[in-house]
Length: 324
Image (tube, rainbow, N blue to C red; front, side, top):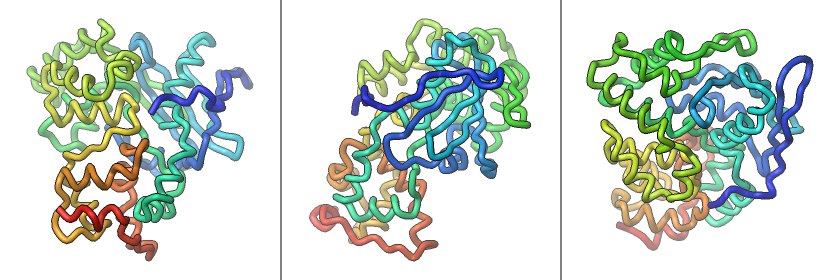
């Protein structure tokens, strides 16, 4: 699905000495859902009305921090660490990793076609997939977290960012952004990272500086070529290559058919008589187009809420026709 050229996105502004912008969602959206998602090495802190983010700005030469708040007028950002000329890039990147850079109005239609998705939308209104801040940050996280407990390596990532990245004061809390590629290359060793992981991080940093991980390049070549390209990075296998493709670049219509946990949930939600195969998943997900990625994330994130709410989805018609 292409970016909606008619989306309503407010331009950057300047308020009380602060650089600001506003993004107006095209459909139901909940900043709380994004803030509490806890995805991509970010902590799922209790939402206090502010989503705090700190990241390497596209181009990967500097970092910014942003305080995000939502009201009826839209999602408002207060930007730290950027000059006025960088505000459009900050706004566009925030819109991308909140999945607000696409026209989401058609996602409601997916629920009209598929009662299971409709039930999930009802118990998780406004949940759109939060992404990694960039393909670079997804690749770095993939190397750091490989074969290690995610919570433990999220702490390593936090300490690495505080020691070698950039720390921002955001709405009364400190938050560190990941080192830029140039900063990463200067790191020779770090507690919690093996020499091999440091070597792989250096390789990713060098490739990033060539434009290899620029979002626009990856969007241009498409999801299949992106997944293939990512596997040329040392330490990135098929699983992490798909992670970067699906959860960092911002493609909305790539079905993650090879995720066993997701297929288990589809088996349960669609009341399939046998475990959901890859082929069955792809048949069911046809009804989700052009939001197959979004629907899959919604299933993963909200399936457990159906039992809590008492909502029981009716099996989609497609499920009864695809038994194995």
